[in-house]
Structure formats: C-alpha cells, structure tokens
Image 1 (cartoon, helix red, strand yellow):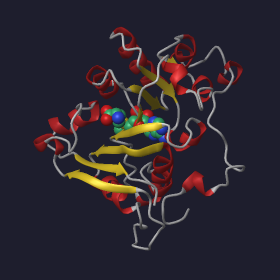
Image 2 (tube, rainbow, N blue to C red):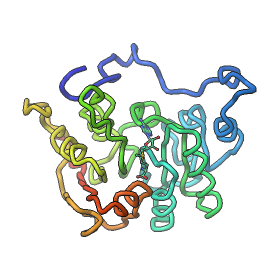
Image 3 (cartoon, protein in one colour):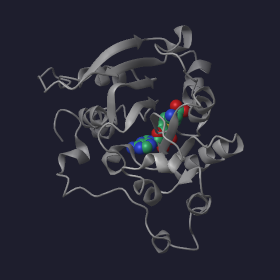
Image 4 (tube, helix red, strand yellow):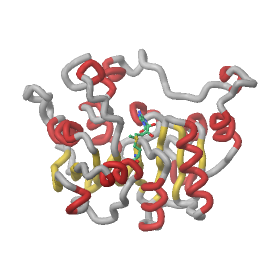
Amino acid sequence: MDMTGRGIKSLTNEERPRFRDHGMEDFGLPGLNPHTKAHIEYGKPVLTATQASKYYGCWDDAFGRSAPMVLEVGCGNGFFLNGLAELRPDYNLLGIEIRYKRVMLTGKKLRSSGRPHALVARYDGWFLDDLFQDGDLHGIHVNHPDPWPKGKHVKNRLLSRPFLEDAARFIKPGGFLRVKSDFKHNIDRTETFIDRTMTGEALPPLPFKVVGREDDVNANGAPWTDDIQTNYQNKFLKKGLPVYAIELLRTDDV
Ligand SMILES: C[S@@+](CC[C@H](N)C(=O)[O-])C[C@H]1O[C@@H](n2cnc3c(N)ncnc32)[C@H](O)[C@@H]1O
C-alpha cells in the first residue's frame, strides 16, 4: 500500500475485481442469510448490486425523474437517509451499504415513509466508478465511516486519497462532500488528501476547497444546513463524546 491509503486502488482498473452480487447458488442455500434473500426479493427502494450497476449512466431512470443526485456512503440503518429524504424532496437520494441487514433496515424505512426519491443499494464505497460517470453527483455524505483505528488497518479507511479522487470525479463543480466522524483523524485525512500525503508530501491538487469544519457537532451543529443526527452520532452524543465534521466544496477543475 502507498502513503495515500490506496489499498485495492493500487490495482489497475483491469486487475481489480468489480463489486457484484453472487448468484443465489453461491450463497450456499438453504443456509442463505435471511437478509441476503430478503434484499434480492424486496424490490424498490432496495437495489441489489447488480441492479444498481445497471443504472450506470442513467440514474434518472432509477428515480423516474431528473433531480440533483446525492449519495450517502455507508448509510447503516437509514436514519440519516430517510431524514434527509424528508428534508430534501428535491434531491434524488441513494444510500449504499455493504451489510445486507442494514440495507433492508434502510429499505423498509424508506418504503414505509413513502419516499420514492430515495433508494438504497447494497454496494461498496470503494467501487463508486462501477456506478457513476463523471459529474453525476451533486453531493456525497459520509457519516461515521468505520474508523479502523489500528495502524495496520489503515488501508481499510474509506477516507483516503483514492476516495477523494473518486469524489472529485463524480461530484460536479459546485457540489459538496460532507463528512461527520467520531474519529478526528478521518476529518484530518479528508482535508490533507486534497493535496498532500499524511506525511506531508505534495500530491497533485484535487478540485476541492474546505468550506466548513467543526470540532463539536453535537454542541454546535454541522457546518451545513439540512443535517440529520445519525444513529452512530447519537451513540457518541449519549456518551458525551465529540463528533467532528468537514465540508468540501467541489470547485471548478484545476
Ligand atoms: C459505523 S457505521 C455508521 C452508520 C451510519 N452512517 C451512522 O452514522 O449511523 C459504518 C457503516 O458503513 C458501512 N460500510 C463500511 N464500509 C463500507 C463500504 N466500503 N461501502 C459501503 N458501506 C460501508 C458499514 O456496514 C456500516 O453500516
């Protein structure tokens, strides 16, 4: 792994695996995880990975309308996504989540609150280029990504230079990347990787500008409007621990 947390992204596009569903036969029926089966059978707002990847280049078709598209990576139980869908009926919202049970929790919430402009897909945030073309997104939210605090696991941290490179490609100029985390290091990484490695070596600058940073969201609110407290944020609030946030503006290409 290189100094930018490249992990799987150190492979060339041809070398790296794509993120796709396995066939039902691969799940070892009848021991199939009930949530895996449910997510295949549920239908919209739940999309399997294979269904989601078919909307590459035509996401408006998934929502049945054209509107600015906002992505949440790692939407967990869907509390934030469902809340944002209520607040922003003018957005097309997509949550992606790798864990089947959480995909289903999100899907059920969205369906029961009747929000056809919000969908959830079982997908992996390391593979955004399977789903999006350049400039497809108005914004990306990442809330409390898994921290991977141990040094030997640093390659697993989603907030990395490759993730920022993807975000710079897929967010159109004028759009946003908004991150909340209980792990301050993740906020520092988001800012640093715009133009440096974590050890200070220069990298080609990405078209992002920091427009907001907050070291205690629970006390002072996020640096943007339209914020929803997430499930994990709530856990840290209850423990009296701080939550950090950063907002990047996608500037014009450099
Ligand atoms: C700590 S939880 C936070 C959940 C939610 N965002 C919140 O704030 O309550 C992190 C979530 O990200 C999901 N996740 C981890 N790595 C992911 C990845 N590469 N792509 C998509 N989701 C991921 C996990 O399954 C988990 O639901």
